[in-house]
Length: 188
Image (cartoon, rainbow, N blue to C red; front, side, top):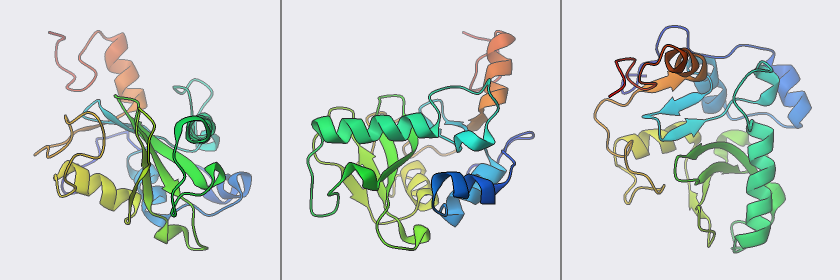
């Protein structure tokens, strides 16, 4: 929160118990806290974080978390390379992505969702990259460039000194007002 404070009006609210019942598992604590404080949106207009579909209104941007998870699983089955760590597409739950079509996921191994590592499925297939850290630590490591090299195909947020998160509603309003979706200033 110090590195990237949420803006006013950010965050999603809802019944997490109902969300977790619909998905059939508990979500990692860092993720639920992120979604509650920031919500669904993007960092530097290049890395997105998805909220569970059950927390989103019908007019929210698509595909949602369920659709991205289905797509990630399909891509892994089609183009991925199983490893000792990633044996099955069913282990994959997508929580975000990049502007260069990388998919950010959890590798759902073990009973403790707080211990699920981050899995990056690259846009060009190949072996998935596993990072033994949670979602918030992964984002922090990417934003501070502590994860080197950059884990996604776009480096705009990698090593960013003052990263900006823009909630999807604010981005939509800025676009309607013909403002730059990231800065809120005039489009150049």
